[in-house]
Image (tube, rainbow, N blue to C red; front, side, top):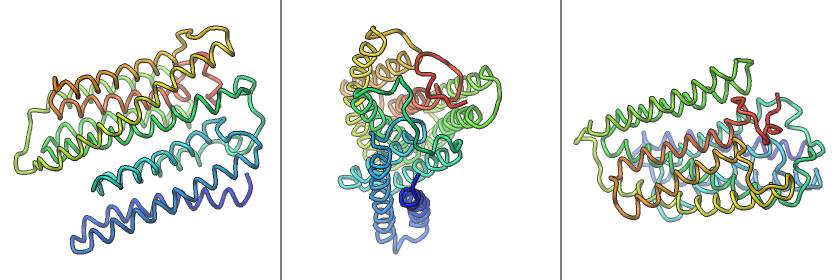
Length: 330
């Protein structure tokens, strides 16, 4: 990795941290809140532009499309998260989502920076990735995952402004269990069985508990206008991410046929991508037909967020194996 590329990546990472703190601090200064929110967005733009140039520079240095290992995919994910928030912020006043988006990007930078040095260095492609399908199949998936994460974060805010604080904290606990399992699976030698149990068990217990606590409402903490706002933002994120995920699944099948002679082999990661697609198809169906209330749809969106984490990072760190296991560096 060149010094120029490293400086740009570090600038993007520091910008995500700085924007996070400015977004958070804006809540403490009501008089200056609009100015501080604007400043936080400007700082995020600086990070987004820096990361864009860093990714392009990495591609030029590598003389290939810069999306071939976990580290590079995390850079793309952080880029898509920041870009997705900035796109949404043009149409919605969603300052509270800003600090969550910045925090997510920061987490991806940290996760990537703690990977082994071999992940950071530019290396020849493994044989399974030497194909023009890589740049067709993977970017739509990464961007869709980022939009789904933003949608899930919007759902958490919807629960908060809707006065369903217990459900929100339980949903956050489920996400925390999933994140902890991924982190432990990446950086420690803990047996995969316990990691899978932590991820799946924590997710199920947290989500079911959050669903059961939806009737626990604090009317004094309810802001119906804000509930509608974050519900609409969540739906917009899913509406953008779903067709991109569809493209990713279809092109994945085409690439699989090109590489392995079969469009679908029920590989664990393929199967989980299909489950994720079905979960968001269900969300869209329920949202359009109004069969389920907004707060229940918020839980469905958080469930989708967990499925995205499992599909994107879980199969690299939790030991599920399969044809995509080359993504695991241990």
